[in-house]
Length: 271
Image 1 (cartoon, rainbow, N blue to C red):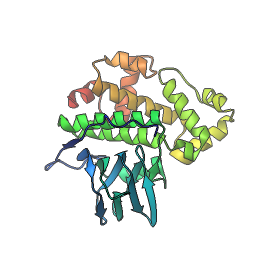
Image 2: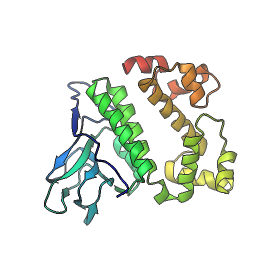
Image 3: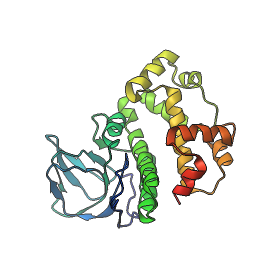
Image 4: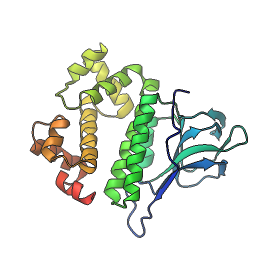
């Protein structure tokens, strides 16, 4: 296998919301541990499962699939599934429980009908980094905003690995966006990278994301900014420069439109 997951430790993190209102995106439990397999009747919680070692057999939506290390399954709430070892022994996995009013529409937008993912090694590495960030947020008992931001970042990163299934061109455009997130990239720049007319590129983004390339790039920049606010001590101005904004003020204005709070307050709430 190309994946080396032997160093991923066993862990368990959870957080009860108590009497707080349910955030739009939420994770209340995540863990990595050996498993003998489970059969689940329909339940209200969706899970994201990452196979670390061994082989597992997934029975889901009328089909049976063999999962190898590095494979990821997104199992929706309200549906029966069975995840068992392929050889009668244990297998190791990461499981993450996902819920919230915005989860289902976001999952449909990012994953469509795809529930089995086979990320490349570099893609898997980035997904595992997002899982570690989410685990840190849960472990430190920060707040609902921090958890929702970490969940969103994980889903966005995980969803990016199926862009090649949707369209090789779309995957190429998103990779270009990520690599040039601090630069003033235009739709014409993106179109030149793919040799597509601008109107066809616009149509592609509308079909898969229900937004324009410019709107998606803005969302990507703000998501990166939110991650840096929570994970670094960089100033708002420095983060603005790293995410393609001409000034801290311009970044703060767009950030507040999207997240409902100014960057400084967002960071304070996440401490």
